[in-house]
Image (cartoon, rainbow, N blue to C red; front, side, top):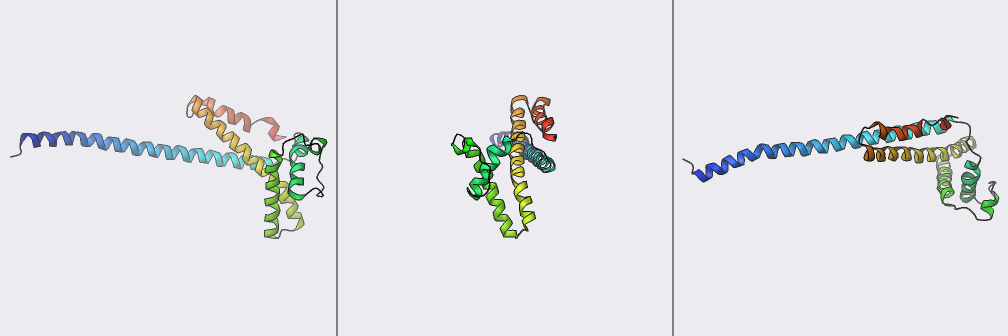
Length: 179
């Protein structure tokens, strides 16, 4: 026959076992939920990137001329040199603007030119790549902004709330992106 101390220890262990099992189950469930949320967040990010790229490549107009003269033209000059035919405005000639924003697109132009050489693209495809590359880069930047605005909204207003979805949807559906 078992001693009373051993019997009490055995009973205590048995009563703790379901609690430990439940804690482990709850911990696994919480990990699974985090994985699901991360996957959903990643799916939303990929959707936003695809939407923004599709939008950028299908629009054939521009919103403001400064889009070209304050970023793409200086970027072209940075990437391909002063004799490359870039239209540089007086602000750039007098060094009144920061080159940080155009430097991003200069990198995109440079990588696109290298990719074009590597793939031995014809001049027509090379030109198309150089036209599309900054649009795609800006689309990815915009999609990241949309995604992290949504994530910030979820932190402030709660996961799945209408308010959290309102901000990125307002940006994605803003009428100026469609014209």
